[in-house]
Length: 130
Image (cartoon, rainbow, N blue to C red; front, side, top):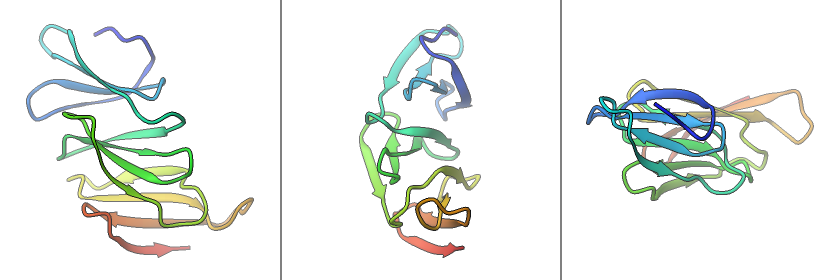
């Protein structure tokens, strides 16, 4: 495959295509057999730390304001936005099935203490642990 930006992670989609998170903040999707680029899903300006969700045709990103956003890879539509904490989320992780998203970030601005937050697929925060 070829890409205009460094590919930082990849995952096969259910239809056999290959999705890749790229350093320019875009998710690119290629036909696995030919390597042809079939789609580019742009994120909002300033979004970082994209994460491809297993078990779902979607990706999660951290917005410039620290909110966690989940975007559909087929349509590019924003599925949900999970703001919750007053401080910015810095890291993301997802459950194997892609049904839970964890966000990690400082408990307060300029703090070394971090809080983990867990959201379900509907965007409901399940808990926060300092």
